[in-house]
Amino acid sequence: MSDCDVIMPDGRWLTLRASLMPQPGETQALHVPEGPHKKRLHGAIWEARMTEPQLISQPAGKRVSLEVCQPRQPQQPEPAPRHTAPGSNGHGDANGKTIPDADASLLAWPAILADRAVRGLWQTTQAKTIALGTSSDWLQGELETSAAQQASLRQLCQVADLGPCELFVPPPVDQAGAALHQQVRAAHPQLILRELENLCCLNGQPQANASVRRAHIWFPVLCGAAEPDRLLSLEIILRRHRYAEGQSDEFIIDGKVTSSQRNEIKTILNSLRQHDQHGVGEWRTLVRMPQDAISGQSYQ
Image (cartoon, rainbow, N blue to C red; front, side):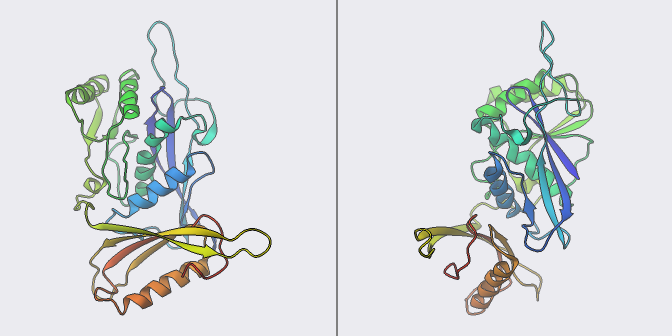
């Protein structure tokens, strides 16, 4: 189990907790709890995994289960508000239900760190880890600041000394941002503040920019007399990757598909790549299937 904390712009704390759980045969390799931000978190984690040195990195028969712990309400004694730190008691709606969409963008970065830590791809040097940042495209791994992130940093300056901990943020974009980072350091002398431009910096690997390609395509689903026919979309995301001799391509099939459908997709793509100029053993592939269950074969 691995935790990563985030302080929201209103001063509440959330903990993003990742655990390795047994994986039943038909379930996904990643489980995100139901809630208003499930799709955002699910998509961000899968996209961020495309920037990793190894795509398939969790033990066989296991899945990563992500939990958004309940918000921790700030204490507000008079005259100067001081907010509770991670690990203190709090209450609120589970899964971040009360978080505005503009602020919910801050949930993805700590979720990604917790996901990597529980799979052994990255380790923090401190007992507590805090992540404050966002991205407009996690597939490229670029970390960005935002108005919500800056508001959270200002809240962090008001929190009582956290002691030894590690804070991951994107680099400041102006002098005001740099000054805010200095204020955080002054408020928490034992805090280690790490500025990262890209997710790849966690492992010291080349950035994913310009090496990733993605494409959408629509396919028909015939529903019979019970309901109208419809179109569903799937997305293919490719990243060039050199494997050791004899290794095959890595695949992740995301979406509401059965294990037999998942294996069928891998088999089809592998067999077709045998005839490509750049064939097997050169690609890391993420296939995003629809979130609706499908029974036909039109997706092939």
